[in-house]
Length: 258
Image (cartoon, rainbow, N blue to C red; front, side):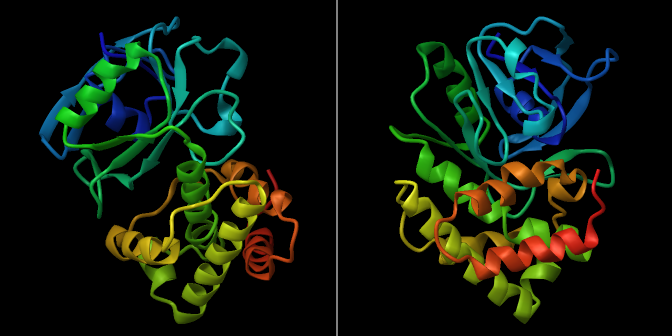
């Protein structure tokens, strides 16, 4: 066994198939059977259903749906946002389900960034690499986590507010200017929290959004992610953030409270 998966949705199934995880715990008891196109090729993933995940466990539920108090001790969260009480693996990728039901990444080679983990995770990291995923091990996970959160806090909420996919938002000149301004504000917020993100974030964001094309981010399916992404950024700001505030206004004007 390499690991267990809690939350075998699109991301959980992609990472589960890549790691050849043998057990998964979802919201239903019917089990999981997915076909996943990885960088290394097609793989059928049919883990055994479990209610008691143990050992290395990838938590791929959304932050607001995660049973934090009952997770196995050797867990890492593959989630969007900030504030998780356990270590995270930051996933720079866009995962979709094709019309034929196959789960795959779009636009970019999936890149995973993980901080210090126990030796029990090394077989999982090795399996991810063997599946063609890029895996980076770093001493401090915070810059990657903040970078991903800033990316999630810009185009994704605008997709939610407008109903457009990522390509349509990114290709709109006014929305692109708003995204780039908000990206700069996010970098400033991170720096105020003692986190220095690698240079040229705007350029990396541009490359990512150019390549993911018509991807519809997960926040369009579940606005409950907003507090841990856009909300966390805005709450952490100690300076004016007009662009992020405008994105938040646009979202609040188009999304009904739960």
